[in-house]
Image (cartoon, rainbow, N blue to C red; front, side, top):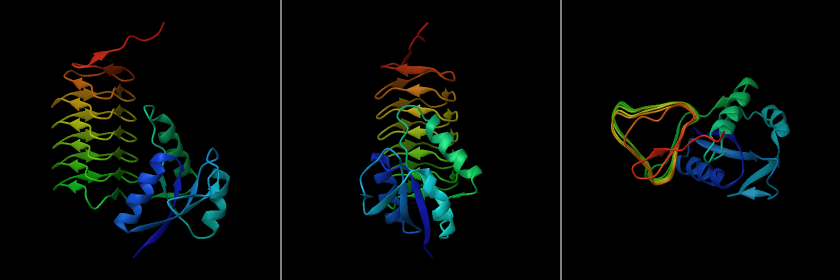
Length: 215
């Protein structure tokens, strides 16, 4: 049985969300909201305006939502949108998984999470709410991924890694097994992370080094 949902956001990442929703077939995206986007439709889904349109959609019986904001590299806006929409009485869609993705035994996926095409999540990994495991990304066995994290396309997260809430793992980055990435940390594209990265810090390069904070 299919259910209707709204996509919060109508930019590039929303296209991935909508395509994955259609491919999975459990939820039908009937509208997208984004005050900054002027186009009429995204992959055939009408862009109805800003978030002020949400009450009207709810009155029409639409109860579910998913965040379609990519959050590169700051995931906090995505987190704020998710939490505020929850407080407004909306229900997050259960995890949306592209049919080409691989989800192994024992994996836990939180609500509102997106697992994009050709992504792989290996046994006993735990992935929180409103997470993006983007195209062809890999989350290995026994990882713990906090809420609102974005694992960008092609990133490789090795076994037993811990990633704190709203952290960003850049495209093509590699995180060594057992490493901890703190909440709101940013790992640059292509970085190779061999040591822990503290909360709120940015690490770039091969091997990854912590950037100094501006005074």
